[in-house]
Image 1 (cartoon, rainbow, N blue to C red):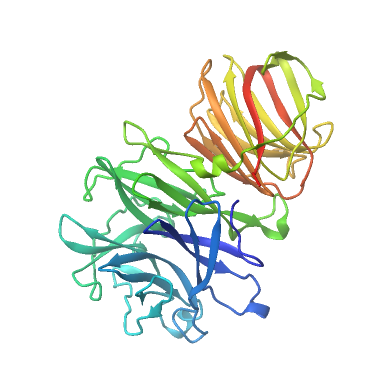
Image 2 (image 1 turned 90 degrees about the horizontal axis):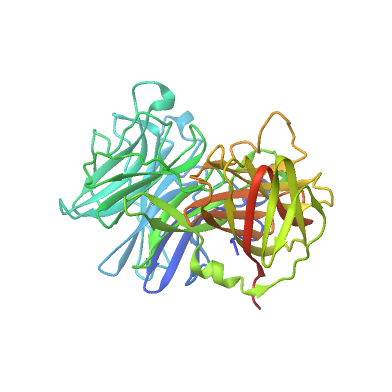
Length: 472
């Protein structure tokens, strides 16, 4: 379900919509310099529904060690009069020691959006007002107010504390060839090391600026404004997911808008090991609230693909568990309760409604558990803290309340029925709560086991459980 190229990983995705096809250009990392050589090319996936993917192969090849674009890093796809233009980052980590810029903006062209040719005489470097080695991820659009082409860039001003120099720069052009980088950044909150993978779109009365940062929690953020001049407002829930969804960019089919990033692998495919650059491609559907704030939910096509019911069985219980028709009331005021529902499939979707009674501290969905819940993964929904968490037991360090940084804020009220969708695709886990909040995680060490529900110090009611797998 969540695409990963064979023998490698997918990193930043550059989505583009053409006719009725989603073209997902992506950075492919082979992770084996000795065997596959150094550098990162662009590859292309095509899909109509985010279910069935067609791998179209390499579309922009990496250069050699002496070339600026040894690594073809993130950019954007732009179409005008039937002609395709890709603006991308040429990155060479060997260049700074030679007195050359590490990153330069480069360009490729295509008539059919399949075969792309590099424009060899095109190059855009950082001017003196920005640092020379962090100047990347161009996003090109037409500014309808000025009639000019605009290019947003991940850049760093050359003054102030190092970890607060990140900004979104802007360049302007009238012909897509000659660009002027403005000295004044497009957005400069002095908050992050850099604003990677900028993306911009309009929905209703609001403009949205999307970027990713690795200063604080390695997350994709957004800002909102009524005009391109700002002011850019920071909403209460300014992220789409947690740190396991990064470098996300958006695309629209004319009706719905989707945001696409990647769920990272861990070194050695081990829990608690450091996360790596790249992994599996993840797609969320963007939802706009009346006040303009954005949330995400599972795309309709992905949810509907899991249309084959699986059987579950009520097994081992602990504490207080009461069954009434198709619902369970779980919990006690003074401790822990749990209900085991049998073996969990490798690829499946769990959907249910849950209502929390006032005063409950923690609610859990446990996954890939052994018979005693001594070894298991836990999706935590914590009304007392207004957050979602991902955890596993046994922990590497017991003084951590959950797996490092795998949390996200969420508004959780008592006596409100919330819907939950959980999609498990091998080690990849995607959790959607209340049709608003997404949380990505990875389950590396425990590959099989049972699933069920648990809570502590309070009661929860679970209803309308669906346990489904992919149709034939």
